[in-house]
Amino acid sequence: MIVEQIYTGCLAQGAYYIQSGTEAAIIDPLREVAPYLKKAAKDGVEIKYIFETHFHADFVSGHVTLADKTGAPIIYGPNANPSFEAHIATDGEEFKLGDVTIRALHTPGHTMESTTYLLLDKNGKETAIFTGDTLFLGDVGRPDLAQKSGDLTIEDLAGYSYDSLREKIMPLPDDVTVYPAHGAGSACGKNMMKETVDTLGNQKKMNYALRADMTKEEFIKEVTDGLLPPPAYFPLNVKLNKEGYSSIDNVLKNGVKPLNSAAFELLANEKEALLLDVRTPADFAKGHIPNSIFIGLNGSFAPWVGELIVDIQQPILLIVDEGREEEAVTRLARVGFDNTIGYLEGGIAAWEKSGKHLETVTSVPATVLEENYTNSKERIFDVRKPGEYLSEHINGAHHTPLSDLNNYLSSFPKEKPFYLHCAGGYRSMIAASILKSRGIHNVIDVQGGYSVIKDTTIPKSDYVCPSTL
Image (cartoon, rainbow, N blue to C red; front, top):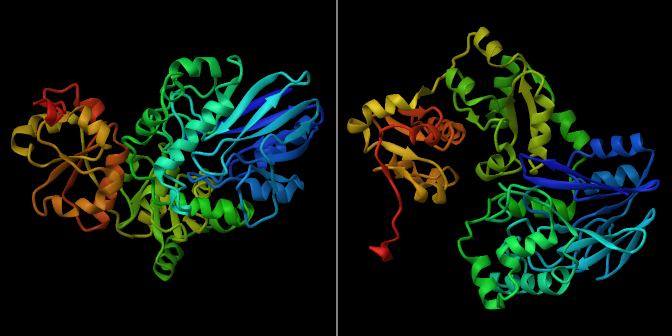
């Protein structure tokens, strides 16, 4: 028996390949299915089952395409009602895979169809659980994503989660391996560990949600406290996972089209396409096409695309480093953005060579901000998340989180230059690109962000809860 976790850092997502004998199963596959097909072919095995733990919100699964290419059935747990053909398992139903068995454990809470898959070895020993978003390492799945689909409240779903954990998962042996769908960085939870595999026994010690003496009321309060609004693209991805989507082959065919500068500009105007620059922050700062938006591939690319681009049907044209075109289109498709219509052949160099205008972003080291702090302290803007800002921030800095930047446009000075920073320089360049596209050009990006600023003499402020004053 072989269990392989296929982890994708950008999405903080774990898919799983289970092999026994000449048969294999895939759990929660990513959109691009070629790696699973190649692995099965290399191992000389048949993909027999495609298991889905629930209708994912943060990425588009590869289940539909994989089923089409292999003929393997898609399996969901109880309460699932997809628009395509699928096997809806009953609670406790078992599936033979070579010498091992996979048992469906219905564990509603994160969503009502959420199901954990229990792996039993050839002797019937409980070996591993694939928990989807029911149980993470250090946390549990947020209970607010499915409540709009019915009459259930967040508290109702949290209550189901409490029961599922205590009735289906916690009674399992401590040496059972826990394989979750996500790790630290995912928006599907709020307190995940950086590790991606653990034992259930250790989770019973480390995970607040599995505390043996916790009441249901305490659980509901802790799980629902401090939840940030989910990204806007989440329900759109659920819809695609539930109703189906275009083959990734077609998405790549349409997206990986080279366009010279003239054709690129013409198509941008005809289709009202978003110009998405996925290079590095430094390259974008040195020169970019006017009105293009920066979201770099070398960062949390897909989640920020989903957070900031409202419409998954939006036509997209790419400015991308040579050789990374297919990667960019694939990673967009992972979160449902299937309408990439081409990329700028030759990149920014070709654009500049054709005589077309480039814009820049003023980007300075933290020492420049340090030198000008006294005269500029009223014009410093922090685009980090609320928790980061509350932990520590520049004294007097305005908090304008990137996820809500459009709601703060009136806060930025119209004439005087202002400084913008995040934690490391990635998000601040995204913010700078958005502001420039809105006609706000007097922005100065702080290179390296707060990770560098904290080592300067610039005064810092810790958050103090008003109730303690």
